[in-house]
Length: 280
Image (cartoon, rainbow, N blue to C red):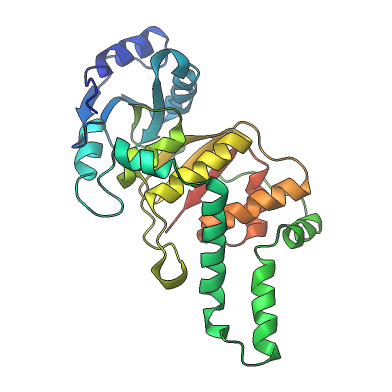
């Protein structure tokens, strides 16, 4: 599927007219090897979140999904070349990813993580091994996580975003898509997670990102806002409310991103309007 690659100029002009940026605004358009067009404008960090929100509200008119990153369209397209699991995005890959049932993918990732954590205890040799397996399983049990969250003090202020107001300008890019959860299949190089720990080499692939993010988009209104290699930020329109739902979201976040620490720590951010993940 070939797409037009000349929208960056009008996006820059409309952004200037709306007061989102002060011109002249660097703008680029590029087309990936598979024919996916991406357009972008360079925006000061202090303004990029407001610009992202403004353009997000206009997706119905433009048909374009905005997202923030450090890579402009030309660099993004070049970075996405190759045959590696985190390269070579395409509409065909997206079509395949969308056939997966999100709940099934989340369950598979949970099983893989638990098996990885308990592989040293299989087959269990004694009661101590069986107890260790049971304790590991509780880390993925929403009821157990809810009980632990109930005994914790209220979480403190959310940590500053990794793409905060200080630093070099960022690219506000645009791609034709239904929603931001499709982006990991169109440009997998945006989000690489090679240190994800799964059982027997089970990788966290672009299709898994699509499934998990689609699940959270449908359930919590989570929107893909920022990605930069090993970091992802979601803007969440309808965060879970109540301990059971927060605990469930915390378990899903921990399954998806073990670097959060555990499901209870993940639960601390689950009720917020911004979710941040990193695979360091």
